[in-house]
Length: 205
Ligand code: GAR
Image 1 (cartoon, rainbow, N blue to C red):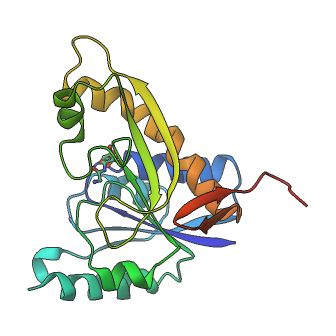
Image 2: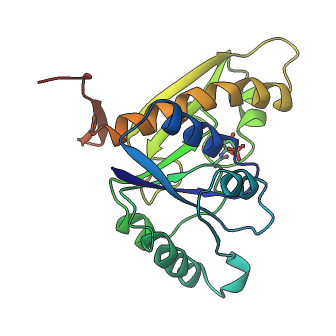
């Protein structure tokens, strides 16, 4: 049974999708904790209502990024994680933190990486005039929004789309994509090879 620790900063709808899929599909895993850097993150209520331990580590309580990440790491490690899942966790993490969780830290980013790293990805996509947009689940490396890609979901950009309509349409795809990717991890079907990810077939002998 693998322990998953999920980090959020707000709404937590991707966290919710992972929690629900983990239970419904009986993964060999449990969501051991949901941790937020914001005390008022909406997603904490869902976690509590589902009996999942929660914690808040506020970045405002620490003078430096290093100090915050060290405190966060200590709290995460208290839950003995096999996997740490960033689900709308809106903090840039230090190389030391990322290195500590190398190979067991996943992120979802709302663009088809390597296109549009950083913020305002839907606006970036519209400004670039792309016909296709999407989301990416990737292993986290020290370089922001880079790292071996596990899976992507794609949507068409439609005439009249705004950042909000794109975000909304993409979010429902994220809710399928992230559980799919996390499940692959907890079933030991992901390997990182030459900076890429190889997905093993189910039930391969
Ligand atoms: C999601 O769209 C996720 O892809 C994005 O924030 C949203 C969080 O929603 N993540 C990032 O932008 C990370 N840089 P949620 O809190 O409802 O899961």
